[in-house]
Image (cartoon, rainbow, N blue to C red):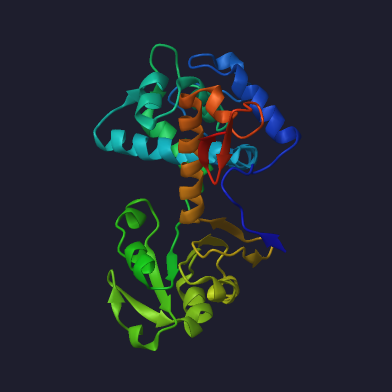
Length: 292
């Protein structure tokens, strides 16, 4: 059995990732000699190289995968606007990362650009789409049509990026048959049958914690192999099922940590040392600095 993956974990570790890291460190825009996998500008990996693309994908760190998705969004918008080429500096600014990190991320998928020209936008879109598995057709099911489920079912960003919501489920019989975002709600007892018939590829769990594992089991039985979990619980799934956990409270706690650390740094080292015995004339009681 496998458990869900939280953000920050690497897709793979060991020699494959290390080799990919070494290749990426030497890569620079317009430096085709940085890696034996570099291709001439304006050319995309042919279908015969699918195995190579998948091998590269297995060596990409999780954080880089998330950034590739951001690059794809930016590049898709540029393509819609008629932009043909873009430099690493321009793309890095639009994506909110530094250019060195961007070039290393793109080296994972074998894209190095051309000095003085940059990257072919449409070619790079195709490379990232293949790496992220977006050349396959997906259908999404949302389970739990509460406030969050309603929002997800009505979110227009899913179909526009290749993830149309095709099925909705809820345990409340009063919701059965009611359309949300144009899709009728089924009872959760129908998860296995409906997911199998509609060939659902991604399941989104937006239920309370106590019912999430049963919902997950139903999705897996219905043939779903990718699950996005908003429930505050760790799901147990077979090894061939990928689970991503989204805990908004945890994300807020992480934000709080970074703000507190920044405030501590701005206050100087003296503030950070309060309460550790370094200053005998001051102490901290329940988070309040007091003088002795």
